[in-house]
Image (cartoon, rainbow, N blue to C red; front, top):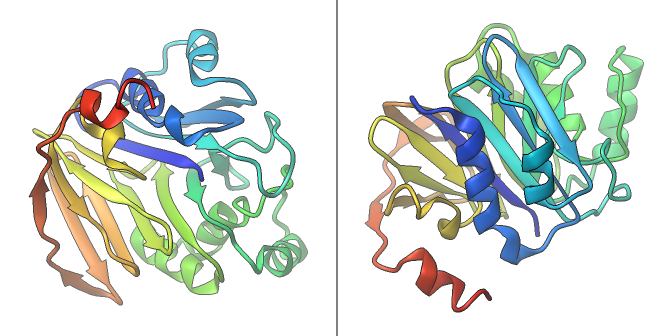
Amino acid sequence: MCGIIGYIGARQAQPILFGCLSRLEYRGYDSCGIAVAGNSIKVYKNAVRAEELRKAVPQLDGTAGIGHTRWATHGQPSQVNAHPHCDCNGKIAVVHNGVITNFQRLKQQLIHEGHKFISETDTEVIPHLIEKHYHGDLEKAVEAALGDVEGSYAIIVLMASESKLIAARKDSPLIIGIGDRENFIASDVPAILDHTSRVIYLEDGDTVVATPDSIKVSREGAEVCREEHKISWSVEEAQRGGY
């Protein structure tokens, strides 16, 4: 059960990502990482606790980013296998909760097409598929990539040249946190309660485009409306004395 977080807004993403990851530690994990987008994407990850990684990461300038806490499923806990994972050019980064059941076939196909893989994970096929399908429209590239995928997923996609986050879910939970000129995407509500109590629960098959000022949810290519909820409980109540 991995934890994922995405942020886009006006504030520096790095401290927000680490704060949100600390709220997801109750889910358990063996490695973690973040990616922050400025002029390029900078990724820092390792098989360590989030606080240890936070102390090791230099200041990363960027107001959009993604983070992840991982329980190893495909590949042992290691720096290489930790999320986020990137495409060949390091321009697309992805965090993922779930299991891609056809990743071996997809990986072999992508290798045959010239893609270079560095990890043992199933997740790494996703950024390479997005890279393959990208022709100037990130949302369409993500939808096409997920059309090739079998299994379960909650993903957040970050691209250096795009001032947006793309997210999608199938059989894994994902929520949107709505802020003031900033937005959050997370696997669970406690991750974002320090910043907002306004939440949208996504449904299976939903794709999200998030910018600092807008949230667009679509399903099968058509925009849909998802109800906004006001969370009445606090982080302290959610933690129940640290549990």
